[in-house]
Image (spheres, rainbow, N blue to C red):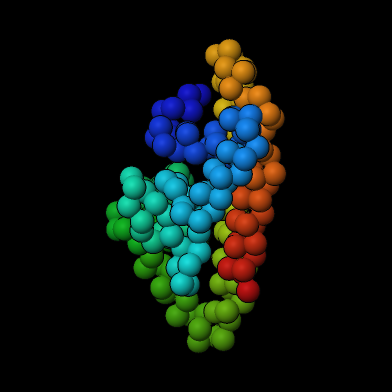
Length: 186
Ligand SMILES: [Zn+2]
């Protein structure tokens, strides 16, 4: 799998700077890390003013943390419950979590609300989905770091990686995401 096909040059550059001691120079590396923290670069995801933000193609925008996950999930043509074709946008949003179409979900929740069971129904679904989203995110990051390191070795770029890998920064990034995820569960 080629890293370059999935990332922009800017993202690859940022990952290199973040995950490696590329410059060998400790001071330069600290400045890079500081820039990353304060200014936010392409592909960063952070929380601010109660929203989740990212920078996509150089433009700052809010992000639904679930969006990327939805896109990657397979959605069947018809709802397994009512057999209607799931072609509405909300069907694609609801199916991966609730395993039925949006209309079925509305009906189900009306029923549960009447019985006073809506909260207990929703909480574990949401928590489970957050856990899975985070797991995917974490393995995505770790895979990319490993791929990057392997590619560098194969391309004979080892000399660019003198100074060692800044794996602390990787861990910090992942821990921040983990905390964010846990906060969403409260
Ligand atoms: Zn349905």
